[in-house]
Structure formats: structure tokens, C-alpha cells
Image 1 (cartoon, rainbow, N blue to C red):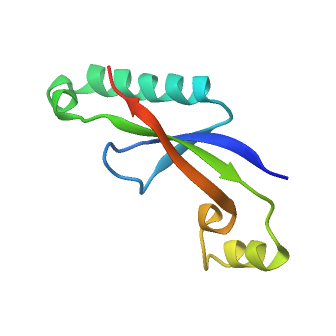
Image 2 (image 1 turned 90 degrees about the horizontal axis):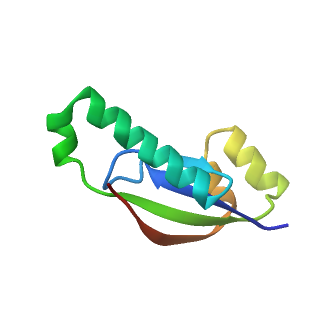
Length: 93
């Protein structure tokens, strides 16, 4: 079984932390809400903030071996079951 999830970069320019949503609309909405909160909190830092990458991820089923590796923190969930990652756009105001 394969399915698609959407993600955006929480920190522009870095894929270290991604926020995931079930669909593109919810993912874009969450990113724009985060940007609005940052702008309200510190407008000067906000002016320097770049665009956030928006991705679609295709995920497949995991084997028992892959699940054990994730549970034992030997690999990430993304590394274990993401079969496709596609940059679909940038989120900016």
C-alpha cells in the first residue's frame, strides 16, 4: 500500500525538521500560519526569512526489519519507507 503525504521545511533552507500533513492544502495552511506567527513575533527576523520548500512524499509499507530499525532508532521513518520525495514548490508570502 502506498500513499502520499505533504511536508514543508520548518526552517527555510533546511530539511532537518519537516512538518507533515495529509494533504497539500493543510500543509500550505500550516506553513503560512507559522510564517504569520514569526512575522508577528519578530518582524525584523521575518524580513530575512527565506522561502520554505514544499514536498510531496510517497510512502510505502514497511517490512518487519525496517520497523525494528526505526524503533531502535537505527534509521528514520522517512529513510525506511519513503519511496519518493518531490519538491513541488516554495511557500512564501
